[in-house]
Figure 1 (cartoon, rainbow, N blue to C red):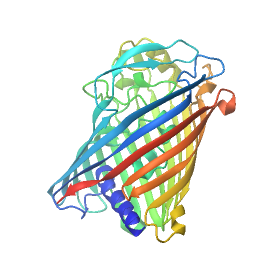
Figure 2: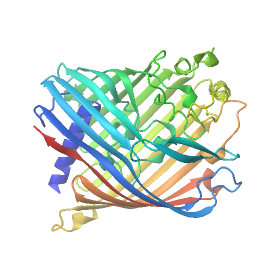
Figure 3: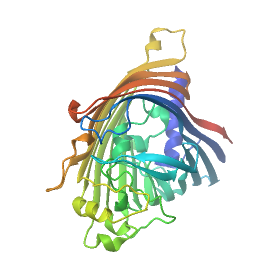
Figure 4: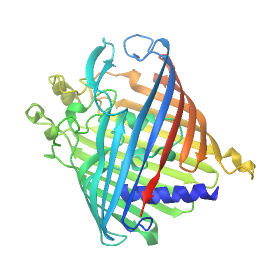
Length: 420
């Protein structure tokens, strides 16, 4: 049991080297190589189109198996105070051509050719340390807004999939290019990170994913005409408890691929988030809250209808989006001193609505108001290798449309494979 919590602590320290703390890390001298990954099987009792029928998704029986992501990380110390870090993420088997059905609210579906999976450079940055309290980072890095973006490895959440609410309204995992200052104030147990990065592209904003599809990955270069600002603070001064707050603000209109069609608009994206984690020997509890606001949402929606063949969705975007969640688990093997592995039943509740607030005169879209109850088990075969199983029941608009039930089985790992 002690080995597991030592691993959690080490994983947190080594992850935050790549994501959000200092380079004063003693777990490796020169180089290290590692990563994390997931394999997933899901069975659904509902059809994929919840929008066309008046009652919601029709009854169905379907199943999928996939490798959602395999991430390979490499860190290199030029010297003790200068560290290069990079992560390469392969999603759903890489790139290629795939057919995908896309459904629109109260409309017919289309079939389009899109990339079958992705290979992305998730991180690529150099950090110069001036001490624990002040460091400078330049490059492509994680935007640590929300609990899952800041701590996205699969051992840091229960369930076979990442929390749906965050994935529905934000890019996840969110990574952008820019400059950050970051560090630790040890006397007050506070970690911080402040960054300026390229902003979002409003042409990618949509009904289903709010600004989540606005990350600039379709084109070869990211527009930075209107940069964005993000920050995160984590307080660890209470035993077993971490309290965090994060935020993001940036205008998006001038980052459009055709900014002349956004003339006179700002498209300001502002996001506020708070999260907490309690992690003791046998108990894990996490909670998260995110609210976002988009100015000029109706005008952006109208402008986006004139964009074709970009690969972006062409649907209305709401002014406000919101999600909150809480999950808790307990290690039942703690009652048996002879068992060294760990079995944690858990429960997770989420609410999320990517159309939480509609600008005056806009159309209400209740099918995007969702809440999800998930129960399941996490069995830690090894400290860094976990077998997951869960059952989720999703309600649409408080039960006014058909419920959607999913059974999932997954395997996830994380760790450094080699270092010296």
